[in-house]
Amino acid sequence: MNKKIAMKTPIVEMDGDEMTRVLWQWIKEILILPFVELKTEYYDLGLVNRDKTDDQVTVDAANANKKYGVGVKCATITPNAQRVEEYKLKQMWKSPNGTIRRILDGTVFRAPILAKGITPYIPGWKKPIVLARHAYGDVYSGVETRTAAGDKAYLLVEDKEGNVKEKLLVQDFAKGGGIVQSVHNTDKSIESFARSCFNYALDVKMPLWFATKDTISKKYDHHFKDIFNDLYEKEYKAKFEAAGIEYMYTLIDDAVARIVRSEGGVLWACKNYDGDVMSDMVATAYGSLGMMTSVLVSPDGNYEFEAAHGTVTRHYYKYLKGEATSTNSVATIFAWTGALAKRGELDGIPELTAFAKKLEKATVSAIEEGKMTGDLVPLFRAEGVTPVKLGSEEFLRAIAEKLA
Image 1 (cartoon, rainbow, N blue to C red):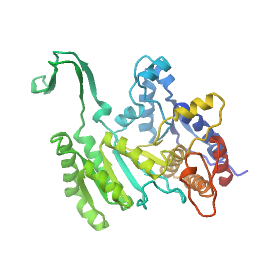
Image 2: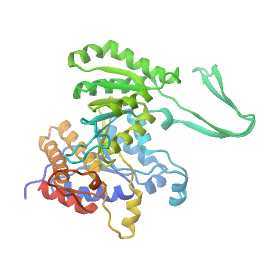
Image 3: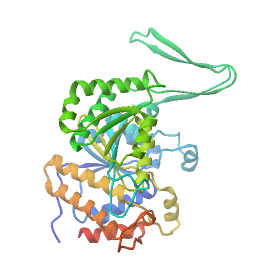
Image 4: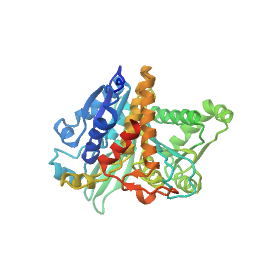
């Protein structure tokens, strides 16, 4: 057997929940450990451990990612009321992704993993659509509460001495109780987001579209628009023209219509919530949420790779009962390959980067040869190839055969 590839610096490994946690271990055992002397700093971000540590483990993992520069994260549960009861949680903990993104202050870039035979639901899409999601603030850092009849809610701004600068009535709940929420963002984070998007567009030679709803949100969303526009005019316009690509701002609803009609080949930048929703739409329209890469890139050069989907709860309950599952692990595999490739690039280990690319190629080749999980079988159309549904672990072993 060939000598395993050695690593210099650890990757920050963030374990997760449910079926993706099961796949996480199998991917390491079957596809990585036979070939790589894997060096990681491990953090258990499973919901049980997050509750046990009062979510401090999530903060620790994010800070470790800042220390080492590269992290890889398994899908995790963001608890709702039902999960609080199911897991007997101390409280309804916030999204771990939101916490990590807030600490790293980066932009999430998501791109489809294309394989011959997997035809998009939107047949006009011939090229990848890369979605850039702002990964700080808005509803993910929101402060919210319930109100009673007779309450009044205000937006209050104080200066650094504590003097009231502005007091705006949000709602008078005189006729009955309700709910209220505040959201925020910062000039620094928005500028980092814009700069990341412009740089990424130049790197991949893709036109950049940015969209908000500034016609309705005349201060909040309009501020995003202004920062993007000012930065483009001052620093990026000449570079874009030289590269032969365009920057376009439009409203979010117009952007959706344009994307659906397009052939792809666009970098679509979205605010945090829009990006959360639209990345799932784009991934599903290309075939499967399991066929999407996701990487958080911070302005100071930190990278966190993850799968762009949830924890596959339904399959996990089947797995616990001993029933067969056929869970798509491609996005989780590509989270690992992305982290390994970046670690190899940063540490000057070309063998590690090459291995990651070979694993990606083996994964796609297995699918193109007709070996795939159940979600892809109805989507697969290739002349002379009959798709075969493989079990969750069986699919990983088919990839390992090609890799070997």
